Length: 232
Image 1: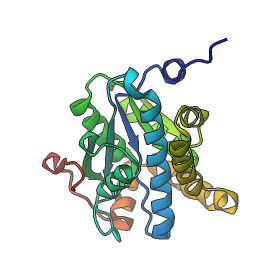
Image 2: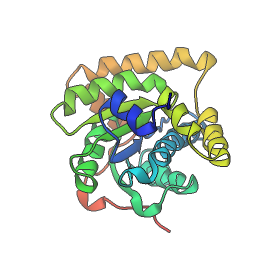
Image 3: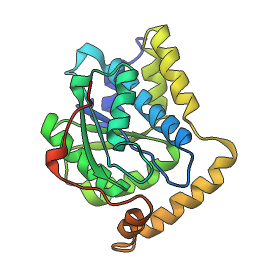
Image 4: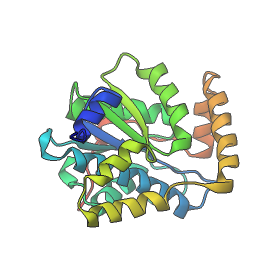
């Protein structure tokens, strides 16, 4: 029996082959910068693996990022993610950035907006860490249920493993190592669960999540004129 291709699996699992994939940002003032960057790189590597697995059988995918210039960052998080994507082999011409977000809710809104600009009507795949998936899915359902299709996927999802299996050995090894290095395990699960639970609760109180994010991470401009691609 012929093994289903990645396109068939995507259609069966999420209902579409993505026109855009978006590694979600990760910047926490109370977390070491190196850990944040490893997590963003892992999400980016999973996004690149999905895109390369889809390959030439579908129109090229776009890569999107929307994290703003938060406290402690040397430059906007979306531009940091864009550089990571380029370093991992994503084509710079297919990356769009918008430094518009300091929390998940406006991050998913911004990336939905970007998707509507670069790949209207096609599905958007948001790639994040496993612990962040439930809250992100709730936000997408609550905020964007009437938008074009959006699916939230963990970088540890079997779909990512299947995508990696379709790639040449050198690419599979490189992207797989980056994903492995940025996947949280062990004792980190307890503080992560507490943090996500508090974020869930804050999101239920109008204005509270925004106020906390503005204080802890800093306010960001949300000017569409700042939409750009990576430099260099």
